[in-house]
View 1: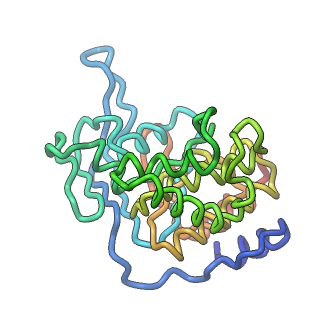
View 2: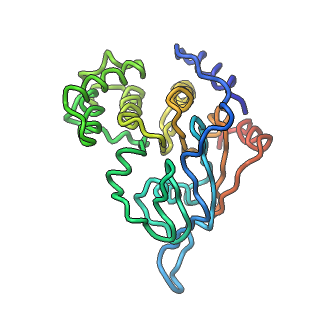
Length: 267
């Protein structure tokens, strides 16, 4: 489970940028989850979707969250993103405790805008805004002026190799181009934490490899912690850390087991 595998996949897919190699040691922890659980309903109708689980992801680390449908992946991701309130546990993001058996009183919307970038499977771009406007809007909502936001958005689109499509509406972009705009939007406020929900689910192997190489490049160069929910075993090789959820139980896979899962044929 090493970076060069993904780098070679990206090269074969025609991606020009090199993927930075090993994760530097002693990077600070960006997100720490301790004993977080979630139960829906109560009494006889109670369903424990997420049993007490713990994980930590460091600056520059690319972590995978595997598991079948209904295993609790989305529940955990939504809990970390402060969208869904857990039932118990503790969450610390970028050094700030946001949940400790209850929300800690932070302004969750403002905190998300500053600290968390979210990449949706369906992109969720605003259809009547151009690519550059979709990216700039996130910065404007965080108090950055329109001119400066536009300048930064153009730089981001250049970094993502899609600057030539800056003035295009989402309907005129390919699926891969829309994905890159969505990634640019997630990076807009330079968040220390990026959460990606099945970013390669609708892509073929070649395009999926490009997206994963790009996420790794972002983690390394921008020092973001990146957590990616996926069931796509084709992409596991490029992750630094692999977690698996089964029936609400989270476990970290040893390197050899993660490599075996990557080599297993897709079902």
